[in-house]
Length: 514
Length: 118
Image (tube, rainbow over all chains, first blue to last red; front, side, top):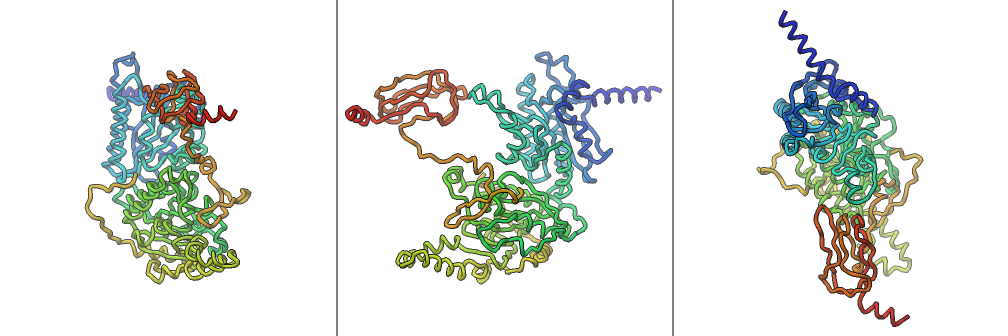
């Protein structure tokens, strides 16, 4: 009889905590178009798979009237569950409990579940919805943030870490997401900034809305802080599931293999690229033509669209694609594109995902803004990331591969395992016009009809040098291939690279141009 | 990222122009202006606390111009080189963003020349 009573008491206690900040606060949360923290977890994880821990953790603050305040779960829900059968650790800040503010115990619940994820080698997913530090706890809140950042860093490259911004995430709180591998945002719901609109207005007199300062679109399109952008919370949760099913769950394994499928893409791959090298096309069509089921999960779709990155499957195995996008900014490399690709390459390398590079780029973006923004330092990250990566690396040169861009885009010289080129590829030190102007300067200057001579010399240069055969004659290109052979060759090259064993000199860590 | 309706633009990379789309970020980028040494601009957003000079003053290099308080620090802005104060574009109490023109200078001699011409 006593046990029964105890069980009933437990149920009551749990029900109390599960109510979070209470019905009124939940109503307010829902009115903002947001799910509750608990609903988010339940919608993300497989049905009946969620198990919660530390429900009865309480804060220990005694100042500022906090001694009389009871905070359900101290404002955060933590636990484990599965996504499509794969175990994950998850936490969700509960905005209905004192604005989801982070105190020391709240942080310690998070670090505990992070430690668990790291030890048990499973992804850790953090759902952020918090007003920030719990000011009443003072330095305790700061300690809490610091302990989270430290663990984010320790877990980096060991387990995938995912941050989901479903509410405010301001001040110091933004740095945990920034340290994680993938950040998910939702329009009109996610808000991230270091100093909010109020501070900016007080200091500068500049009025700006939260959305314009650090809304989802800003981070998806301008800052590059976000990797996935969704219009609704449900769409966002589905994106997370798609990602989790594509990536390995620790650096000690490979992504789960699924049944191979042929591409669905029905257009002729030979017709994707226009004959005129100055005309653009959507390089994602080439990816669709190559990958299983033509399914491609693009990462950072809106930011630096001149380079495309994302995951797909080839013959059932996950690969990372990096592709220049001639549709935007002619596919040049710039600061943002270099940062975007470099970080993605490092993720792939850390998690045993082979990298397939599709190249069609005219060079680095010229301009004072780029030079002053540090295109040297940013561009170097791409060289570093490709050179450092020991996973299988395959490059297909689709069209243009000029100058520094040729070197940067996973060239043989940076350690590519396989280099293929389509027959129309132009592999040269620079574009034919530029090269002819320099090499044949004298002839052009002395000619009666300078334009005709320039045209003639450009044509000469194109025929002699702007092709894949010069590079192939030196062994820098392994094979010049027909577009329709590409999928088979890429599949084959990855197949024979399965036991790739590439060593790097011993080091504590490198010093990349961060 | 649908290509259809959007107008492709000419985009020059070295000697060749490519047809392509521009990203919003690229369109909104800050265009480079050659800095004018006769313009004293704010290097940090802040508030003007005091101004130590008046228009028409001849001020020596290194002399104190004004105090710009930013991030709880009172920054003393000094004269970059000896010149005359042409115009003071800020007032005490103004909150200004970064790169705001605070003071316009003019060369001592040129100012005299202008007067002679008139």
